[in-house]
Image (cartoon, rainbow, N blue to C red; front, top):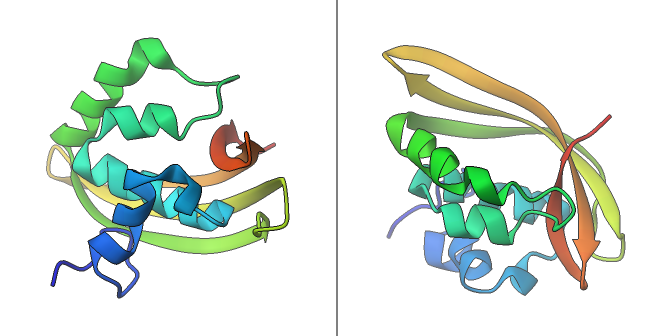
Length: 129
């Protein structure tokens, strides 16, 4: 059994793997955020672009993002809080810490991310204000 990278106890194939294969399987903003973390662990630049809202999608940075994701060692994801972003919502935020090693030093990304539905699918919009 391969535990999911996002930290939930489910197998990858029953957790983020379901969302990676079909983004419609992300029923909440948190599920999409967790799937994006797993995509960073896997350095899956295509999924990171596909799950990004079209108005803020950094297509020209896809390879750089994937290369950076490969260059670090991902440790864990901690979800700190969320606001809205449920199945019936159209927008929401998720606050999280993502831990990784870069050049032998433990680093953390602390982010409050904004998510918005596009064509009825959750997408990452960017940093929440």
